[in-house]
Image (cartoon, rainbow, N blue to C red; front, side, top):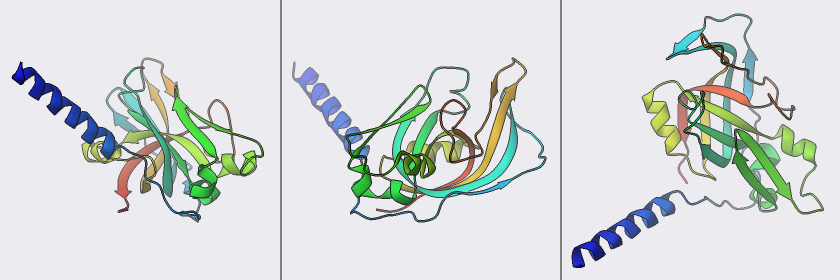
Amino acid sequence: MKKVLYIGLALCALLFWRDWNRREIIHPPGILVHEPPRQQNLQAAEPLLQGEFRLTPRASFSLRARVLSRENYHWGAESDLSPMDLALGWGVMSDQQVLDRITITQGTRWYFTRYELPAPIPDASIISNSSNMHMVPANSWVRKKLKEIRRGDLVALRGSLVDVGSDSGFTWTTSLSRNDTGNGSCEIFYVEHVNIEKH
């Protein structure tokens, strides 16, 4: 009986430690990331092969951003390629004072915002200063670093935006704009470098 109790206590402690390490990071009011993402469109680039997938670079891409939300994926044709999405914010969408009034969720590869009226900022500002991005780790090191990211982290990511295809007929097209909405508005981000800033 004591053995069962000890195992139960150990599991509770492990779950508490895991949830504590995943807790959201809260910042003081004020814009934390002033610069928007940097993008340079490419005219033609050689495809990259990753397993069964063929990745065609469309633009070099880098950004520093606040993590608004993170969602892991385990099912679907694309989950092996892109095991998680990050909702990222910059400008006014990196300001704790604004984010305190917006509920942010993710699911089924989408990113959702909800708020009570009056709106903390115009919808156009939410759209142009945040995005849901499908993370495609370039290697096992990047995959490991992405798994360490928590809601509220400040991160710097570098790589390229890619279109995805496969011989099975699967296709996935990246957005090249920060102002679009709806289907096809997410970036497919082939990530080659990750830096998580110290708190």
